[in-house]
Length: 102
Image (tube, rainbow, N blue to C red):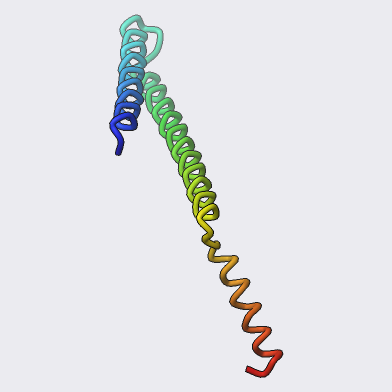
């Protein structure tokens, strides 16, 4: 992993942890002031955690799809064919051979 990529990852991770800690402090303060009950606080934190996890999974899927598309583009530029294209050509050759008695 490149140094820049590592730094970006660590920056994002640090920001996420910092945001989570601030959110938990805010919720704890609300409990201390009697604005919400401890069970409501737990529900809030769990709901937000699930939201953040879902958002992270969604972004991960998006990045993986983008990386896959870039890889496929690079392979095409290098002259490689996809498995699907290869199988179509193979089937076509087989049909032609069968037509000509081979």
